[in-house]
Image 1 (tube, rainbow, N blue to C red):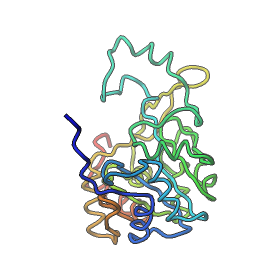
Image 2: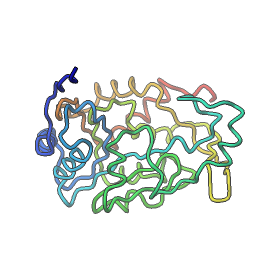
Image 3: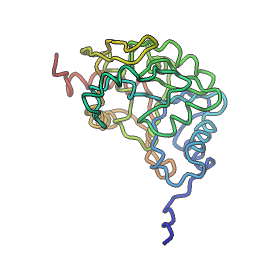
Image 4: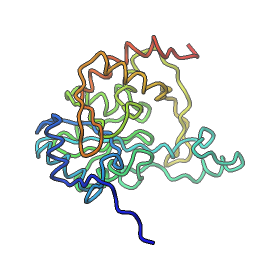
Length: 264
C-alpha cells in the first residue's frame, strides 16, 4: 500500500520569498525569526529553501537572526521533557560535554534555526543555554558579548537586536516562542535561580534571572490587540511581523500586572 500524497500546498524558495516581501519583510532590515517548518506546507527543499527565501527577501545587506538554544546543557534535576532518573543526575553532570558554539546542536527550536547555525558564514553567541545565530552584515554586532550569566537580558543578543531596530517574524510559530518577551523579564522585578551548566573545568554553578514562557500566549494576544502587528500568510503558515522593541516594551508593562512572580 503506497503512502498518501502530501496535501500541500507546494511551497518553493521563490514563492516563500514572494510571500515574505508581500507580508512586509524589507531588504536590508534585521529580522529575528521564530519558525515552524511543518506549518508552511510541502516545502521543496525543506529548511534550506526557507533560509534561502529569508535571505532573498532580506537581500545581501539584511541580517537574519534565530534562537539556537541548548536547554539540554542544564542541570538534569530540572528536566521534565523527558526527566531522567535521580540516580543518573551526578553522572550526567560529570560527563555532559561543555558548550561549543561550533559543535553543539540547537535543541527544541526546530530545524530552520539549526540550518542557520550551520550555514556558511553564520556566527553564534556564546551563552551555553540561550545562544542565537545570525547571518549577514550585522551578525557579529548581534552575537558578540553574550554574557554567560545573562540568558536573554541586557547583555544578550536580544538587547543588541533591539538597539538595531530589529523586527520579529513569527513564521508559523506562536507567541509562546517569542523570545522578545523574555527581555522584559529582566526589566521588571525578578528572582534569581541556579542555572548550572558544564564547563571546561567541570560542572559550573551559575546564578541567572529566572525566566519562563508561562502565559506568553495570553501576553501575545493582548499585545496584538493593542499594538499594530502585520499579519498574513507565508506558504500555508500564519505569519506575524512586528518591532522587537514594541514587544519588549508591552511585555514590561503587562507582566507585573498579569503574571506577578509568586516569590516576590
